[in-house]
Image (cartoon, rainbow over all chains, first blue to last red; front, top):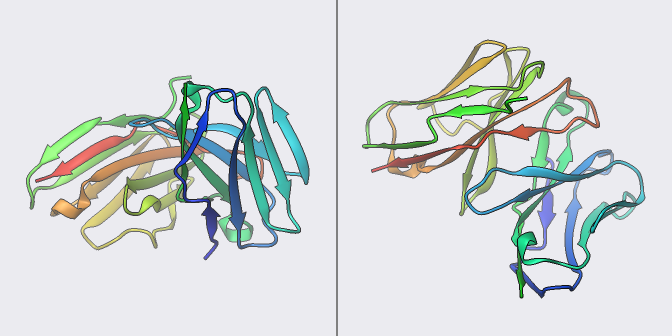
Length: 113
Length: 115
């Protein structure tokens, strides 16, 4: 059973600050990682994916992956109130479970004006 | 693309009644997933299909739950009889080919309340 752990939060940051969301995973051979954002009352939507060690940037979002430490993070620069949501970390299965994702419990982020 | 379609969007029923949730995946996607989300347990995978065949149903909580996928464009999740603890949001998601870099796309969900 693969485990995906996220900092439980909730996380609260002021507008304009950097929000840092963290995720660790148990399966050392995992290769693909995803960050989903879920607004209250809505369904999860993909915002970032990362497959290689290092950083991947997309606008105000940066995903960081360290496979040796089994750690993936999401940084949100210049946080906006519209970033307030729950962020879910997901790890793709391997082998016979390649088709599925394993989700963490999520971290609730609030960005206050 | 229309995205993943789920119906109904909201369902209120009484304990003991049968509930059927429906899902139409994105055209061309060969994986379909049913999830349940609650505050207490987060997002749980109930069952998933590949090419209409159930691959893993270990997340189905009890025999009261059943899922079918009669063709590539339709799936149902049935709860019979329903109980108050089944109240949750049920999401359907689909993906293509199950490759490393393919992600899942979620439907809007069905909010189920069992009284």
